[in-house]
Image (cartoon, rainbow over all chains, first blue to last red; front, side, top):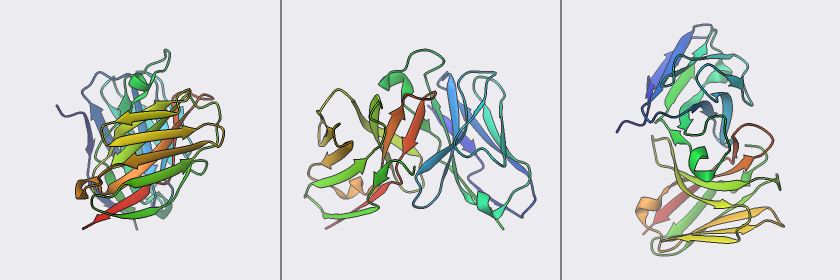
Length: 119
Length: 112
């Protein structure tokens, strides 16, 4: 049971380069999320997708784009990487779609993270 | 995670109890969560509490909620070396879609 799978695990970019982080979940979840984790700052939401075909900005969307390719896959793209985007990126999913929330359907399942360095 | 605050580090002896504290800001938050992150891994949900509860116990874990003071705590009884990890508290805001706001995380170190 794979859960949430992210690739790559590590990446080093030069300033200005572009790349796409891939995420896939096999739990038939409706919602998917991209977070970044920085020391002393917890997790901050970059973008989320409440259902297939919809995406919305989170707290820190600048410099990123996302695509909800299908129900399983949600990718994060950095068009022109900057040193400020050096971080650990986590993809997550939850069962909840557009209906009422509950602690069960709101529960986040996380991937193992991508450590990105921008030089 | 600027609105959810946690101390950054806690060190305890193996076998003692650990208490990790958290303060949050949104009094209308419905659920409050504790997530655990082990080295090199993503976060995993440990437990949660509904905002109309004061306490929840789950084996070695006890969650206490003081809604008046917006204070949440996680007590781990008989702390083991396998409990060494970063613990995140998160509140579920009602203002936006499934908006979980995370604290910065408390690194728990368990020593012999």
